[in-house]
Image (cartoon, rainbow, N blue to C red):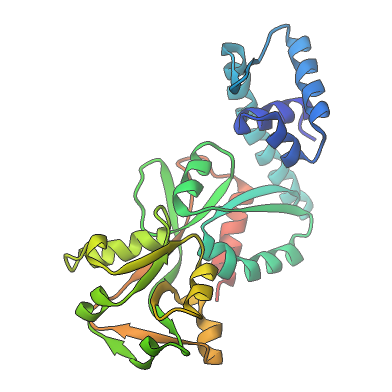
Length: 296
């Protein structure tokens, strides 16, 4: 097992919080404090600045963080190679997934992966695309799965799955009676969309921009923070929602929602795996390859 005191230090530094580190490591906050104190005593130097506004790394802390990060990376690679020899893999993989992917795409794949590799612990964190990217860059997670197209040089992007954004309305509402509308009709139809920073909203705005339509031109009634919130909102509102087809396929099949074609508007995107350039490891690669082979 990797040196526990260094693991505690690294987790505290990543979260800039003793409380969050305790929650993540499933130990008490006094245990976190004791491990940090013992590490500082063994090194003979303070690793954190402590003040009322929180904590931050000292110069020594930044040095220890840099070397600890390298050591953790090497330990994970060693753990994977030993598992490969034993044909019995173990370890921990932290995945950040944007909302649509976490709720509607990953669960089946995670279940299958767990059956094949029961000793690999997977932690999944749900954020919008913007926050997943931040967590990947700050090394809070090992792998991101996001919506939208490659946009940052810092990341390695691996295309995973195609998706389509569709216009939906609840069948109880008058707006659902049309199976197709024009772009002009869409502009004037009440809409409910995802929040700013969402990959879903980003790809919608990009598609509209190709038709020289801006968000301010639309009749947006509300922005909501999840696809489920949008679907629930539409049950009692005569609005159209724009969401992933993966998120509504079951309800459409049951007859709860109607997909409305928008003439001339094609909103497609690619789900991508992302990790920092040059920093993938064996466990991350194994998970990506498994998902690529088992996606439906």
